Amino acid sequence: MIKIAFSPVYKYHLPKGHRFPMEKYELLPQQLLLEGTVFEDQFFHPKQLTDEMILKTHSEEYLNKLYNLPLPRKEERAIGFPVHKSLIERGKHISHGTLDCAYYAMENGVALNVAGGTHHAFRDRGEGFCVFNDFAIAANILLDRKDVSKILIVDLDVHQGNGTASIFKDDDRVFTFSMHGAKNYPVRKETSDLDCGLPDGCEDEEYLTELKSILPSLIQKVDPDLMMYLSGVDVLASDKLGRLSLSLEGCKARDRFVFEACERSKIPVAVSMGGGYSEKLSDIIEAHANTYRVATEIYD
Image: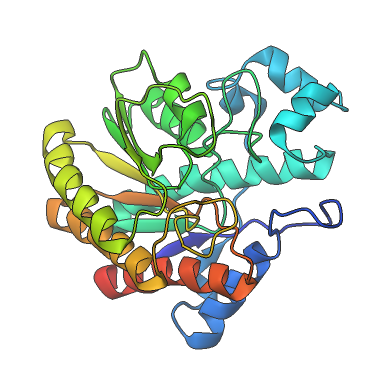
């Protein structure tokens, strides 16, 4: 059975007019249940990370700043929205959910987190709507426990996974691959183990051709015990922050190719949903729902 991590949004509200669509985290599970793609017993509510777990990735100084809010204005601006206690608490649940998904994936082939993909968080700071780096936290815990020895991070969000690249730059147990808009945020890119920058306006055929030329050989080369897949849907042409031009079907084909590559190689894959900022909320939900639909087709 495919397991799905779901962390309630609580009562955290962004300022009026903010472009981050918090509603998607509540609406996506409702859509999946309504259409019968998944069922209630597949969802689980992850517990919170302990400080000890967080400190395997983030610095003690940064964690203390989060516990003694407010953050300095410059640091809060870099994150992109006000950081409240409820957001920090939710972030602990989300990151633990990614860790749980890794374990469920190793049992069942795949598991998905209805949140996460917070790849702009560095060891000592947050950026770009990201406070804790869920992939990095989960990866470091898994490696520390010796439950895996090699992890491949496949980051297909439209924005480069700069925080993740920085955290693992000197760790050969984690291979970071980011395929993103070359001219998009962040302006100053970090260096992943493999970066693929795409031109503005990149459409389905060019995108999928590039991905297909890279991923199978990369899986063979890295030979990971686990893949972590960031399935951001901000690659859509309709995305306000994306600058690429994929269709809904192209984005779905991307997910299908990733899952089929993992299934064929018998590599478990833990998925976090990442970004999505289309003008119409229905487009965001449809694109994220496609990830779950394809996973269900392939693994159930």
